[in-house]
Image 1 (cartoon, rainbow, N blue to C red):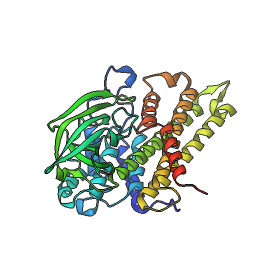
Image 2 (image 1 turned 60 degrees about the horizontal axis):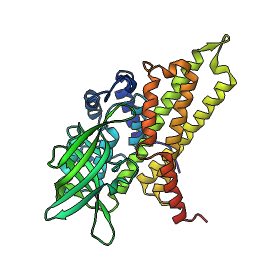
Image 3 (image 1 turned 180 degrees about the horizontal axis):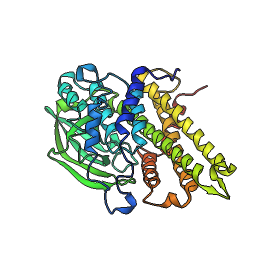
Image 4 (image 1 turned 90 degrees about the vertical axis):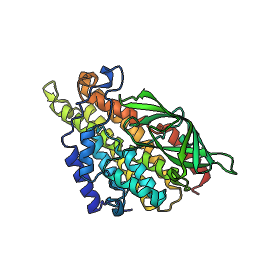
Amino acid sequence: MDFTFTEEQLAAAEAARGVFAGVAPDSVPSPALTTGAVAEGFDRELWSRLADADLLSLLLDEAHGGAGLNAIALCLVLRESAGVLARVPLLEHSAAAATVQAYGEPKSAAGLLARAGRGQLVLTVAANGRTGHDPAEQAVTAQREAAAWVLDGVQTAVPWVYDADLVVVPARVEGSVADRTVLALVPREQDGVTLTEQVSTNGERLAELRLASTRIDAADVIESDGAWEWLHALLVTGTCALALGLGEHVLNMTSEYTGKREQFGYPIATFQAVAVQAADRYIDLRAMEATLWQAAWRITSGASGVLPATGDVAVAKIWAAEGVRRVVQTAQHLHGGFGADTSYPLHRYHAWAKHLELALGPAAAYEERLGDLLAAHPLG
């Protein structure tokens, strides 16, 4: 396949670089220096700039004020955002809005999507399940009652929920021949919704979302088959883009530091042991990049293959989770004492990398999924 980006995709990345140029990744305290969340909410000023640059509506059609682009464009923007540890729900918001557009009822979605594209309505997704180790679609049950759905269950580690207007919650419909998954758009202030604060590895504020007989109008529930699978694949692929952008920035930091740090009268970057480690991490990043664009291309184009698109998504997540961990660990090692200094920006990148490594499941979980796919679709 051709991985050459279109002019529109490159323009989106260029616009993102302009918006993120003034963001300082060390402007928020290190999680190691706080007893709770590092900040109460996301960066509203940055959110407004993203809206003004039309970067919150990339995946929306022109009818909703969007650019009509695809997951590849979103991943290019997310890649830029991770380099500065941008504290905005860009991935969750964009993925949720795109899913509503693709699978929701057009009449009920129109007003929501227009406001979401302008940043006036903030969306997030509950995608981590009850414990963070079980499937998200198994954590909440949904039962139809007349013109409403009733939800019960728990979702853990929901990002940005204290600032979101709507949370997209996958829920299992029981009682049919085969269980199916619906997506409910749950208002944060809805009756029956309880939030309990949690703090992530990178110090960001999350929440346990508890639903107790929470009634949602049928018009606000997406019943289309495949909606959750598509949304989950987009979230995972976007997480891979964040890991790539973070890893590239950290390797650049490491290159700059080792080029200046001298030992025995020479920059340590000239030592073979240092150069080899940096080269290995460069290879990791290139593998992360190749698998990311393969996954983004598959879920964007719907192209067929020996394995479903979920296979390419699993491969991308395996490389992203393991690759970003190796990149930040090598950076810590080559920075020496600076790597452990909590006032130095590398510490925050390390914390974010660990969060991304485990987000939506660690590499081992996706290796198991890939094994199941290979067993179900023999390559021979």
